[in-house]
Amino acid sequence: MGALGNVLGVVAILLGRIPAGGVAQVALDFSSVAIVIVAIFTGPRLGALTGLISGIGPMVIFGYVYGSTGPITALLPVGKALTGLFVGIIAQLMGSNRKVRTPFILAAVWIGFIPEAVLTWFYFVNLVPLFVQGGSFWAPGLALTVLVKGWTEMTIIAFLTVALVRSAGFRAFLGRIVPGQSFQ
Figure 1: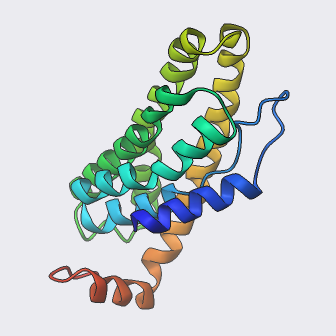
Figure 2 (figure 1 turned 90 degrees about the vertical axis):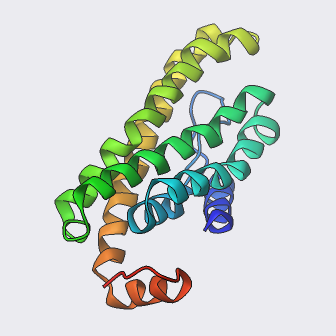
């Protein structure tokens, strides 16, 4: 699922760039699809690990291909790991009988994204100005753009997850690839 997250992230980033005042670092990133699915179905540990792995491709693209933020972009996989961890914790707290109900899935995804959103804000407002020349002028505005984009993506991912959770075929598929887990 980490590999799938990287593919979903990199392909979306390469195809879905969003014009933001001449800055190339705003693009769609659907790597969190794999993260949320793993976190909801298997819990916080695998959700966090999937987030860490799924963030590698987007980190390389945003930090070295499209941008010049370099080493500080290493926080991107950390943010994705936080999302996997917290979505997984919330899903675990909900219990298995609530994991299939739409309001609980939406809440788990939206609340689970809050730590990554806080890290994203910190990254743009505090770190980018230190490491990127002229960043203090454009980074706070870019932070807002990236966060609006991020919340939009997470909303789409939440509804996609609801559809997948309701699919008996998808749950059966997960049962075959994750031994010892029941997804029915």
